[in-house]
Every structure is written in structure tokens, then in C-alpha cells.
Image (cartoon, rainbow, N blue to C red; front, side, top):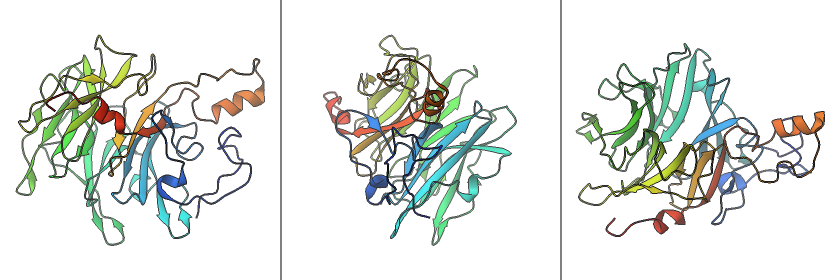
Length: 327
């Protein structure tokens, strides 16, 4: 079914067209952003639920993201696909429909051949593991859990993949409240021993959900506990040179990070043009009209920027703007 943007309980008047229209064109037919972050696909992707974790096929014809509710008791992946008739309606893909499990953090390899995601039993233990599917002629194949080199008896999350198959991911430490960023090289058809990355990458009290550039030239990582933070959790970018040295972490600044909001899931489009990121920021004009009413409360609840996490996008030029000399 083609997506129609229309007035409904899901889509608020503030984010939807008054008349139905078919969505066509790249990125769900959205107007490309500029230097300032704006909501991505309001009412479709950013719809009032907790939305995060973007992933796209290299040609941009499939877009996936994660949705969670009830403090992750309900957690799964949504997806849309571009057809000759327009974009399909958002739906849970077949591999992520079993409510006995949690599904989140989709990631597609730069060549489009593999689809990674995180899966865990919905038992409250949060022992997350990384799974993968191969691309087949008519879609994605059967999911398989990665081996013990990657998945251990602690939680592994947020896969991100380079051109040469190197896998970056987060792993919980001895303290279950602390995570670190690891990587595993793909050599001779298998993953090598995972290595914890150095302090410039793992620079805070805890850090997680690192997105790596396809050429491994930079890493965008969510960090908590640094003195130069703008809020509770901020996005930092760390650059890598040909010697496998990492720059000092750079706070991505006020265009991306906000005081008090949660920011912990970044993605850059395969063409390098756009930075997508999750944030729980609130709009500055939320209470533009004073006074409450039942209708207004429902409108806020069913709209983006209601305190749940939304997905934003902006030009990715900021990545080069922040790059330090020598990296």
C-alpha cells in the first residue's frame, strides 16, 4: 500500500497535509534539510512514538528504524520500501514480529548484502545479541545469530559496518551500567577477536551506539559523563587516520546536541549527504498558546517532539567542519 499523508489519530494537524497525497521521491519524498536539524518524515517516521536507529539500503529504496514502548517491553523494527507507485506504508518486517523478543538497532552493510540487528528475549534480562541476514533475490534471508567471538554472556548492541566488513559494536563491561565500543575485523570469511577501542573512543563514564563511516574515517559515538557535555548524553565524533590513530573526541555542538535531552543513535546516509540522529528534545514553541484542554493534550501526545525520541536529519557538512588537522 502506498503511504497517504492524511488527518488521523496518528498524524497531528501540525505535521500532516490537509489533503491526502502520495509520497514519492528519495527519503520518503521529504524536503531535504539544510544546516539546521529538522524532523525526519513527521507523522510517518517521527510520529509521537519512541523512534530511533535509522538504516537504509545503499540505493535508498528501503528505510528501517526502531520503535519502542513501555521502557523497551515493546521493541521492534519498522520499515518502508520505495516502489514504482510510491513508498509503502510503515510496517513491521516479518523477522521482527514475534513479541516474545525485542528487536532494535537495524544496520545494513555499505554494499547492501547484509542486514544486522539486535535481538533479545523479552524477559527483562537485556542480554542483547547481534544477528544478521543475507540479501537474497526477493528480500532478506533467514536471520542467524553471530558467533561467540561477537556475542558473549553480556549484552552486545548497535552493529555498524565498514566497507571491508569490520564490525563495530557496543559491549557491556563488568559494571552493567558501563558500555564500551569494540570492533572486530572480518578476515578470511570470519570475525576476528573483538578489541576494545582506545580511550579517545571510549572517553566517558559510559559510551555506546557508535556509527562508523564506511571507509572507517570517523566514528560518531554517544557519550555520557564528559566535562564538555551540553546535556546528559551527547554525540561526539572521533576521526581515524591511516595509522589507525584516533583523534580527541569532538562534541558535535548545539546543532546536534541539546541540554537535558537524550541523544544516542546516529546514522549517515550512504551518499554522505545527510546526518540522521535520534533526540528527545522538545520544541521551543511547545506552549505557544497558553492553557490546557483535553484536545490539546491528545494532540501533543500523538505528535512528534512530545518527550519521546524522534529522528532528525541535517546536512552532513558538519562532519568535515569539525575534522581536526591530521585526520
